Image 1: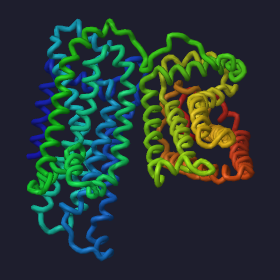
Image 2 (image 1 turned 120 degrees about the horizontal axis):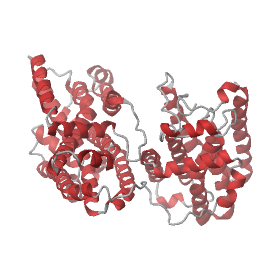
Image 3 (image 1 turned 120 degrees about the vertical axis):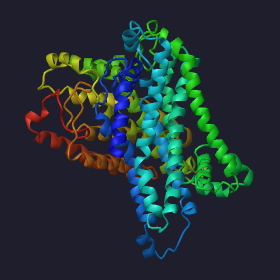
Image 4 (image 1 turned 90 degrees about the vertical axis):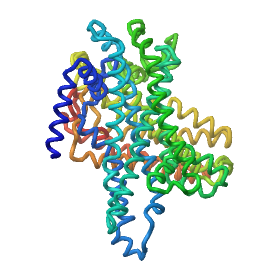
Length: 581
């Protein structure tokens, strides 16, 4: 019977997809999952299967960890008795709510540009006998289909595994179904709200702003939303306990805000609607979901005709506004820093690609947002903000901020180097550059240092100068610069290609080890180095400990490169090892 239902549903979909309206829906769905950006840059072709795995992985991993907490055998060994699953799981339910909203919202931010029609769609669709109303409805249907897919995929694992972990050992089937249905319904609604909220913001901006201004502010809007999502994820462990410490009036105000309000909706679905605040929380959650849905539809409807018909009049612009003049204060140093014409040309190409490509800027801005949130978390871990800027030497929390931002910025740009800009244009590099000359590493090194230290070093220097004087500021800036240079050399250990000119690296058997290495590097660079600097600044003579440490790392890097085969040093334009190795 199940097989016949699937066959019937497939026949209906095939029949619908052959209609003109169905073909439009299929076209817009295809561009949302696969289409390249407006500038022709190639997208990350990882397939729908891999996308599904990546989106479902957070919920799967967290659900598996819950077996250790709620498993009957584990609870027996710990001496824990019976518990009420509808009460004991409130903190974990809130965490799952936040997790599903963050993953769904992040996926919606990733496909932000694909929901809007571009010049290619205008050129292909306008000559066809298709009404503008049908184009609008087909694209709107594709948007809602994308929201539905994201919602199901993100929560697929947790909807099954988390109820099994919590009440799977209970003898009552009714209890299991009651818990599982409530968890599934609310998680799906919360994910749908997050995705719709992102698209609603995009629709409002597109309605209020001219097309050129919207494209310029699009990256800033996505960056701000990404920071908010990361902040929301960072509060997932503290909010349930924090709510118990608030007064009744303040708790009532906070409870009607998403995602807290969705806990009230969950309690209502579980049959706990008579509890305090639950009815107000349920109404607030339903209102938030309805507002996100209606705002998405109304904003997109109000802006669709104007934006679509003006596509030919809108010039192709990058995500960042261009300066009205091309003066650079670093121009006199260009000849000295970039010694060969090849280095100057490649460095110019890499810098312009980072600043003008929407896909590469998304990667860098995501890592920068992660760095900002991590820095805020470190600063908030101090007993009070006043203690951070008092004392004879800069505190560890204060010093960690510069190292966190430097690490996230450099790693983000390093990973962005693996995204090809346009492989059909890399023939000029193949034809012009000598494979035996090591042009790739100097170019990548200078770009990484330029985009990180050019603003981090002055910012760290001025901030330290304001509280601790010239000596501490100079020493902090010097240590930050030296440590960043060493980090760049380690990340470029085997680098031998011009950024953005090679295909994506294939998945390697040791890719998991690479991720672990990046996490270990983050812990060492952002935790241990600031502690060493804090210990050294209290007595400037201790700074000499940095010299042998950094020299040992640089010496190891140089020794490894000398022992490499000449074949492994040649410039390449095809698939090489994964990033970082």
